[in-house]
Amino acid sequence: MVSQTNTNRGRGPRGRGRGRKDEEKSPYIEKVVSVRRVSKVVKGGRNLSFAAFVVIGDEKGKVGYSSGKAAAVPDAVRKAVSTAKKELESINIKGTTVPHEVVAKFGASKVMIKPAAQGTGIIAGGGVRAVMEVAGIKDVISKIHGSNNVFNVVKATMKALKSMEMVNKPKSVEKNDKPKDIEKNESENKTN
Image (cartoon, rainbow, N blue to C red; front, side, top):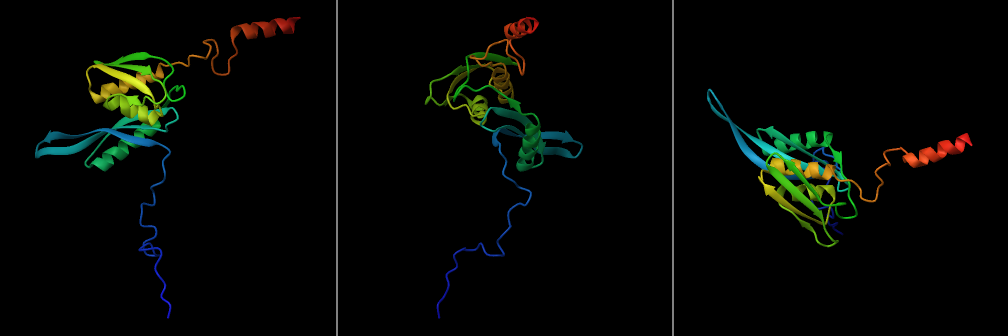
């Protein structure tokens, strides 16, 4: 009698489909920047909960951030991710770095971001590093001045990245608009 070896090792018909059914592959990368235990004092004592601050992105220039609060850490992270997905913003990327140097301030936090040569890596602190990783920026140098409050640092970083413009793009070219001198030449050609 020939015995068959079980090649699926515990993944038989009973083990199939045990994962979450509602869990689907998300195109976004999530970085949990901070998790804090917070409490609310009520008549009967203290109500403990967790606040999570999350940054998400698609590594192609779309980034969002948000915070969520719940009784358990996974629930807080899930809430933060769902609201961050609704608030995604596009940023300009030049290859693997940023187009130019920029400084932005939010609250008492001031963030300076500089482009770096390919292969440099991400030279940045906590909140800035999380934003750069999920944005898809591989080579950058940054410095945080003033307060290093993670919330304000992430907001200042986002403000800096949103203010960046592509260096090689002419200022007069907007979305679907032609430069003014081209429009003028076209109108002169039509009248002739």
